[in-house]
Image (cartoon, rainbow, N blue to C red; front, top):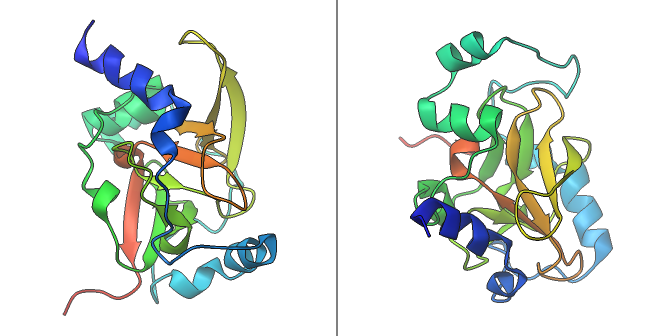
Length: 187
């Protein structure tokens, strides 16, 4: 079995996400999740250049996306590829800030929504509301829920039901599909 295929298979195994902890500490209620979603801009850096919302949707031909994205980002975002587990520096990112789509700069997650799933990919237990669409992916042995950016349609990863409570969800994201915007710039 090739390493890439094996990594994809491992990404889908639900037992991998059992050791979970939010970087901001445990979240105990849906009210805390709702507050986190509503107040996500508190973790956005002043004057950060991000997309205002998922509309209008972006549509570019493949040649234009290839000009805008690195080869690795193009493979994940436009061809539904998967990066190798443990290859993204964003998996270990712990600073306060916002994670945006690498394709269109739409804010997707905050650092308060991130946790260490032990899978080797950046993982989140919730999202900024309205930023993703979903489809069913049948590429492996069983059906998985794929999520993609509501603005550019870029593939980000899959949602699993083995995340921390109270959501129980794990948004398993390819790091190359994200851009991290720290709350404060380094001096």
